[in-house]
Length: 119
Image (cartoon, rainbow, N blue to C red; front, side, top):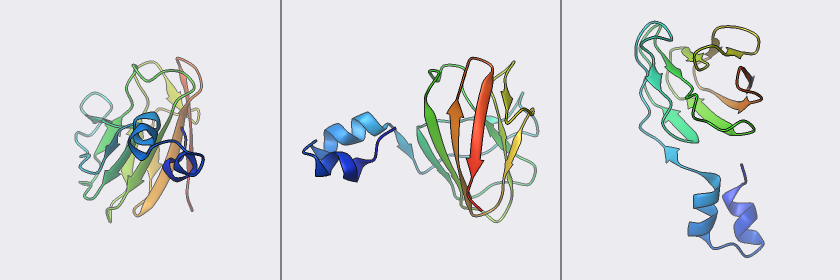
């Protein structure tokens, strides 16, 4: 995933750069208490302003291998992040994203996701 400002700096029009970077969702919500009923991540960069206790989001199995998704939990509650069915994230069934913390998640294979969270 590129950076809009970097692409604009080398002559790519802003609207084209936005389409390359992907969809930004500033209204993502969390839901459920497990991978089975978590809210589907809708965008390439998502922001959650409010996260209910023990709720989460799940990554889509439609995301191409090699793709990155940026997630920012802007709430005061930890967010549970689940990989698609049959996959793991950092070798586990879920990953917690702490309050007021962002993470970059990469789909490394059909069954492996890796996440790096900010400190």
